Image (cartoon, rainbow, N blue to C red; front, side, top):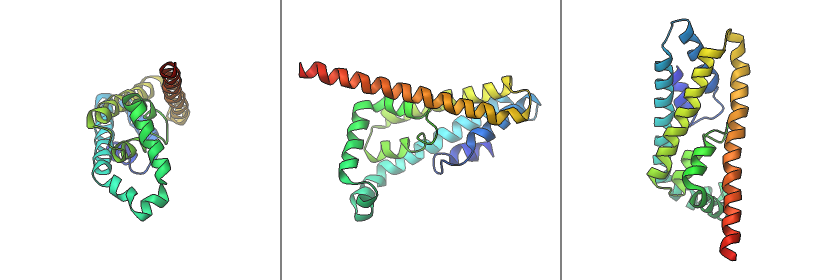
Length: 185
């Protein structure tokens, strides 16, 4: 169940994968499962599904968004801005965005649609997924004394992830602005 929800989060973001993973990690304290297996299953399923979504979008996403329906969903100007953002921020944009709840699910398909190279996408996806779910599982296994605390810890993790992801994105924007100003001089 943990693996299915961790994988499904990349396809249907509203699924409560973080909560289920935290419950699985909490259950590792009770000896029901091992913490290593919770982290491994979560990381493997989430990373694999993100990579599959990226590869499918890389193969078929671009033609879809060039068609009439795709141009209605994302206007050509918006697609051009998206491409520039991925080109500019690349690896760090993918990495930082994976810590932002709700946003983490749209990173792989758009990286594929804009044609970001596999090494620029897969490596940061793997690392960010391991950091996020590993930290969540370890915190849930070690710091949650009662099952009722899981929702509070997951909410705090999501806020911290949002702050960290936005911090990385803010750093990227500031660095880009300074880089543009330096080039203009």
